[in-house]
Image (cartoon, rainbow, N blue to C red; front, top):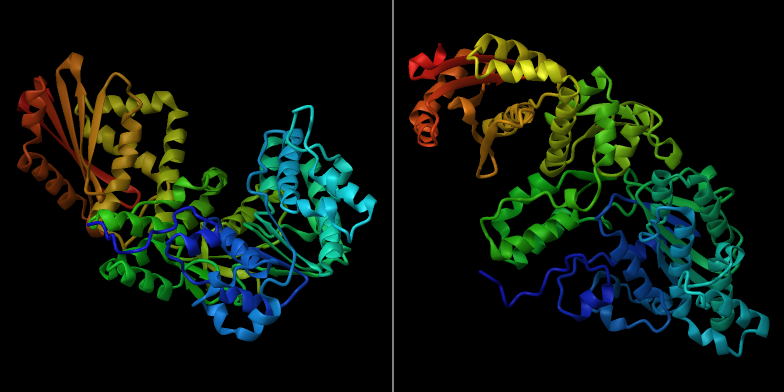
Amino acid sequence: MVMKDKVKLPIGIENFEKIRTEGFYYVDKTGLIRELLDNWGEVNLFARPRRFGKSLNMNMLRCFFECGCRSELFEGLEISRAADYCEKYMGRFPVISITLKGVSAMDFLGAKAMLRTVIGNEAMRFLFLKESPRLSEDEKESYRQLAALDSAGHQKFSMSDDMLADSLYTLSNLLRKHYGQKVILLIDEYDVPLDKARHCGYYDEMVTLIRNLFGTALKTNDSLQFAVLTGCLRIAKESIFTGLNNLNVFSVTDVRFASRFGFTSEDVRQLLGYYHLEDKFETIRKWYDGYRFGNTEVYCPWDVINYVDLLRTEPAAFPRAYWINTSGNDIIRKFIRMATPSTRREIEALVAGETVTHRIRQELTYRELYDNIDNLWSVLFTTGYLTQRGSGADAADVYRLAIPNQEIRQIFEEQIQEWFQEEARKDAPRLDAFCDAFPQGDAEAVERQFNAYLRKTISIRDTAVKTAKKENFYHGILLGLLAHREDWVVASNIESGDGYSDILVELEEDGLGIIIEVKYAENGNFEKGCREAMAQIDDMGYVASLLEDGMERVLKYGIACHKKKCMVQVAGFPPSAMV
């Protein structure tokens, strides 16, 4: 039932003013303002994974500090109760606010054009500088160069490379002179251009440009009151923050600001209470909680908001993996492909809900990310695919790492299956022999070869999940292997999100149908698992459905799996099918 009397949920909205004025639910994070001022640093970097509210917080900071602030936007919020802070800081500063999340071109020239557009559009917000009585003619000309459009139409703005490198420094100087007040600089998603440059082969050029842009704006800028940057990774100082000694970095391991990005349990309870969905708290906790920033348990807000929005119209809806659809999973893919046998054992432990202990390097350059498997542990941690469950040793940079929740576990499982199928396809003769053993009724060969495949994969042995979920993994492995035979009709149906039903195979030219039922052998009782599998095939009447499809004979396979071992039994219908 649609709750028409409730405000809307702000899915994908990062504009604080819009949320506050157009009837959207807002989880109050304005306490960030006071905490930032109390822990004041000239340059402040917040490193958080994607979709944890960084951009909305940055827009909220701009709305609070910028000259002409609408104070009513903050009425009833946490910061409004700190009257002295509001009186001293609200609406008192010129603010430069840019986001670099869209600077993601395929080449360096395109990236520079995008960066010109970002900074040029921000400069256009201050058109009054053209006529400011407080600026000299030379200073006005500098502003015109920042905001000049490209008459040739090759790009939106025409500022030179030298002007681009000095653009933030220049604009902050012009604003300080006009207002007689130092400037606050907000740079959201500062590391996106570097990530794209690494992928597309122009990393060195982009590092130089960003280093020059940030160096003048952040290091030697007398017009700067303070700056706030956000990003996913804490890029090493020697890479783009050369000589910047005034940098305060707040990563996911810091206690300060821990509750200001993402939702706390109390935030989620209040949200669910408002929409009368209190009974969904435990489900949401399992799927979207589990991150730990400092000592605070944190939920991914993107996931929570999307799922609550779905529940408003579909109260019985099963949780979905929203985060998967908003960020590429290249890191997981590379991690699994680079994994050594010992690392694969650690991945198995993680998927099983256990922890592994590793040293985390929080300062890396993008050039170093995939140099070795040790660096990838650090990347998985800083990007949110792993979280910490406490220190693992006396050293300050060693942590016990865990998969945060069911959603991220699903990403790992899917990538494990994709990796395994790719590996299996590399040996086509062996895969053909495995598939051919099924229509031949050769249970011994199927068992022997499936055991060999299972020994090489990364097993799912999570004792905390339902048996059907464990069976789901083995079904996925089998489906991927059998899909190799393009001349076979291979089908499997999903049951209520918990696992697959039987695998049905039809060899139409031979008039042969194959039913495969997989059971998870609890406590390693393979014979019991096989019996249950064969009984289910008979009880559910799957043979009849294949006969109705025109199959003349049917082979029934019961396969019991536990960890990296299996047992296989086969029977025919009619019995002569085994001949």
